[in-house]
Image 1: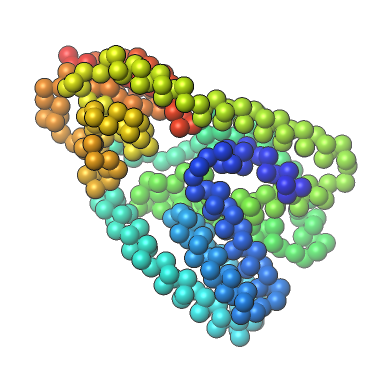
Image 2: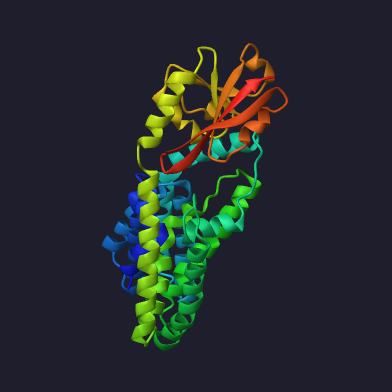
Length: 362
């Protein structure tokens, strides 16, 4: 049943992305496994393996570090609750070693967040809505399907009853621990995003989904009626098929070729290509000789040498045309005081649907 959850939409999506999330899922699951193994029976070897896995997990992603931190707190609570005070020595050594190993990168993370939180930018910071999180967790973040989201949420609610039966019978609270870690991480991440830097996306807790799917798998296993299990299997596989079809559509290179052909015909020598988020600006690698600006970013955050931060209207003096690359149509309206805008091209690139707006000086 745990293998079946690998066909949930979120798992299908990240199995096709060459990003850090699948590595985070693997390493955090390994870390959690060693933590559970230590709970059952301790040894120096297991503590060393748990510490090594923790360090590797923390270096995958900033939120992976937070997930490991929460896991350490839960372990401390379990050890103290069970009065395993002798184990606290090994626990403290493990925590200190892991912390020292991560310290070099932690200093970088703190500097980055401090610079961003204190930076006055033109970019409007907005919170991700609950609907966006649900779309990422239970469907597709680009083109979410409401019925898919409803099915996934309903599945969680339905299996919760059977998980409770399992826990009552076995007194094994591991399924609850996984959901607890996820809940704490989401709460902490949203708080961090709201107060320090607006950075939390739903996919950032993907590494803990191994434990979340364990919760679901335990619940499905306890369902006695075979026909109910059959319906769940069919619906999960249908969701997987729709999601995979969408991923295949988005990963094709035809969109890039379409964009390059259009720009070769229309891009002027003095024109500017602009975006307002660095992921959208990745398109700049395909025409490196063009002039690029990124709207409302501090210079230290710009990822490419052929790009500069746009923060003053005087920077557009002498520029008659700006090509605005965006995933949400209408963003070029930010130039509305000086330019007339229209969408001139739609294309897919890097798993996203993009729009190209032409902004012409009035």
